[in-house]
Image (cartoon, rainbow, N blue to C red; front, side):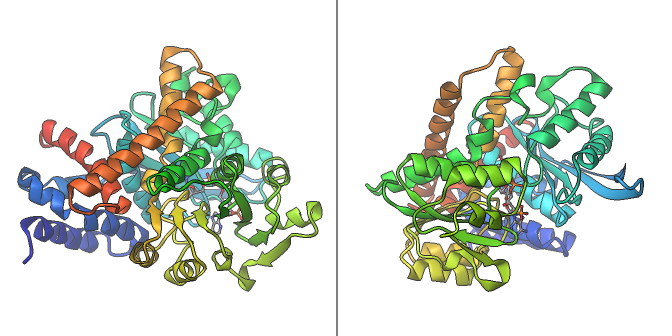
Amino acid sequence: MVTAGQAYVAEVFEKVKRANPHEVEFLQAVEEVFDSLAPVFDAYPNYIAENLLERLVEPERIISFRVPWLDDKGQVQVNRGYRVQYSSAIGPYKGGLRFHPSVTQSIIKFLGFEQIFKNSLTGLPIGGGKGGSNFDPKGKSDAEIMRFCQSFMTELQKHIGPSLDVPAGDIGVGGREIGYLFGQYKRLNGYENGVLTGKGLAYGGSLTRKEATGYGVVYFMEQMLEAKGDSLADKTAIVSGSGNVAIYAIEKLQEKGAKVVACSDSSGYIYHENGLDLAAIKQIKEVERGRIKAYLDHHPDAVFYPREEGRIWDLKADLAFPCATQNELEERDAKTLIQNGLIAIAEGANMPSTLEATKAFQKAGVLFGPAKAANAGGVAVSALEMSQNSMRLSWSFDEVDEKLYAIMKGIHQSASQAAEDFGHSGDLVVGANIAGFLKVAEAMSQQGLI
Ligand code: NDP
């Protein structure tokens, strides 16, 4: 029998599909969340009467704008900028900016939608938003990056503010870009350090922000393993990507006694049987902004597999951490990993596993930490950066790290509890979706028809 909750969720999903027929990534993210929510609407029929889901799935506002800039040859270039202000039910819009040629409205909407639930799960008062541009930072000079960031912020600054909308970094937006963006915001509006997070330590950034997402993913994995009486020590791990999230996931894994044997970038992956040398990876990626293949210059005994010649998920490992991008791990990869004895996976990237891959892992009993729970450490420390900015003081590295650890533990607990309460014990996908949704729904319900 179809319950009232199931019928309502299905009806709203049909409407979302009709209204956004070409937004494939957005529909994928919506489907994953909607799949979990029917029991909530059965338990709280007033949310159906308030048509809460149809309201939540429609962004409060989408801003799309022209970003013209001059390249080093003096030629005019034009990119498209976005900011999706998705939900302010529980706090100011909060979410990163992504600069990558693949960026479309669908990508920014999927990220913004996910961000609502992730931010709610942290327990901190932050709403959901996301932004970015189809600008490709690869191969650009510092001066080009600066001119692009200045042009982007000249428009974006009209729509953001410390109590309104607080962007941060994401793919292609790290400390350098946040610096240029902040400089331009300040030039136009005066000093307001709470308007962006991920800032440099010299001008209002928080210690541990750079490490937060990667460390947080590992803390989340540790919680999943501990709940089964297991630990990270002596486990073999693979981490995809070699950007901000991947690097600090590797750092924390090594600190906790795990051996990380592989990481990647969009050109391919490296395998180092004895365990990766993180100092070499930081030098290549953070200092030289080079390609991962250069790891072989430091360690000729490692192997590089170009993208066309193999997938990082073909390797044997106990633990997997997809930390690069959406849909990087497909059903066939999940099957290979399962066959090779994978115990657990925690998603550092946003929506890195396809829906089919996620289902395959869960069916095989692999512990699965979904992105909106496992990678919430970054936005959590961003919210702590906002707190420090408001108080005009800064906490020590250890103080922020302890808070991060407590938040990740709290997220694991609330997702586990919600899964149990709604009849899906052990399913953290359902648990995270429900736990994230409940707080937002309550806030929306109390605030009337807005
Ligand atoms: P970075 O730009 O620092 O690094 C991204 C990494 O992923 C690079 O190694 C990049 O390789 C690789 N990558 C990106 N796109 C692709 C692609 N299409 N195919 C293959 N590889 C790709 O980004 P972050 O580390 O900050 O972000 C990684 C993921 O984590 C994203 O999904 C992001 O949304 C998510 N995330 C990030 C947070 C943060 O605090 N930074 C917070 C929460 C989630 P290459 O250099 O070759 O492009």
